[in-house]
Image 1 (spheres, rainbow, N blue to C red):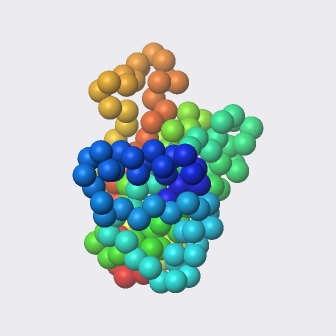
Image 2 (image 1 turned 30 degrees about the horizontal axis):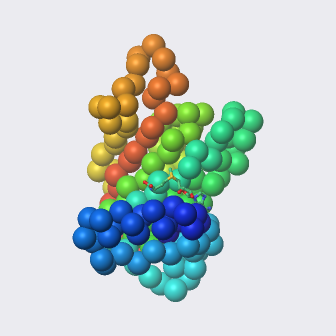
Length: 149
Ligand SMILES: C[S@@+](CC[C@H](N)C(=O)[O-])C[C@H]1O[C@@H](n2cnc3c(N)ncnc32)[C@H](O)[C@@H]1O
């Protein structure tokens, strides 16, 4: 799911080049489609949330965190029992602690028992420098849902 026609088209070309034919591409606004999927009672074994940086500046941090919470809450609600959710943020202004607190908030509101499986950050080809905090903006968390929706 992506709202970009061009992004989806590029994805389809890459899938074809790699001989992958079992992908359904959906052009949609994630905020709308996640709600719709929940309303329809759809469930998914694996969900990956890879949104753009919602917090481009410190001034819109609260709004950005609300956006992250909304998509994570909806994803938690449509996660099948035992399914995995990989969720990420590339907003420098959203610290790892703030991201984790947002996820805990979403988990509480989802009514699910959500278990933490692991955390990750930038890959080795994108080094994080201890004395340059701006380089540590990539955050990823792997979760699983233990209980029924
Ligand atoms: C960090 S990129 C992820 C791209 C993709 N995961 C990839 O690896 O190529 C963020 C993507 O979110 C899409 N996006 C931004 N806002 C969106 C929204 N409200 N609903 C759906 N997609 C959105 C952008 O078009 C962009 O492709």
